[in-house]
Amino acid sequence: MELKKNPKADLEKSKGLFFEIGLAVALGLCLLAFEWKTYEIVNEGLGQLQAEILEEEIIPITQQQYTPPPPPPPQTVELEIVEDDEEVEDDVKIDTEADQKTTVQEVVQQAEEVVEEPEIFTIVEDMPEFPGGQEQLFKYLGQNIKFPAMAKDAGITGTVFVTFVVGSDGKIKDAKVLRGIGGGCDEEALRVIKSMPAWKPGKQRGKSVSVQYNLPVRFTLR
Image (cartoon, rainbow, N blue to C red; front, top):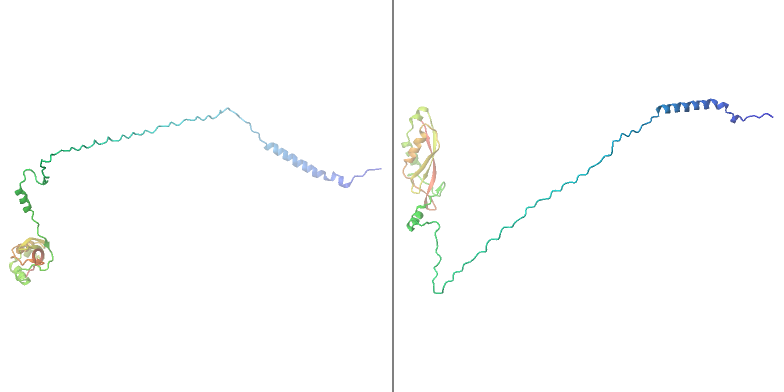
């Protein structure tokens, strides 16, 4: 009796597939063999790293010893025992401003020499006035002022502002120019003002006082 193979068990049909699988595996092993690398472990004896630990030097902190100052010597109080019958002089007052050569008369003279300067007012209840009033003042200036030749030749005109003090006695003092125009006009204005007669002094609370007064002096060519 002849045996027959099962068609499913027949491998002749899959022969080509197995051959291709074998070729693929062989090719893969060849590629793996070419790519395989080996490393040689080299030990040249580099030695072992030795770490040396240095101890940190500790510097002690120097501290200055504080020596307290010596205590002050104890104060001694001397007691003077006085008998009951002995008289004790009173305290003597000493003038610190006077020396051994200073006499009583000199001290009195120094006190008399200290004289307070009178206060100078700018505005008071009753202002100082020229004898006869403002009209007489302008008349006086017009009659006494002489136009300087230098200013006349140079054609200088204008107003010179002068300030002065009318004392408590009415006399003129401390006259000076506040703003001048030159050409000899400033000096002429001062000359005329200083030569003015005594004014009626200004009063504050019924008392004659010194008053600062400003006066414009005009120079014009006619």
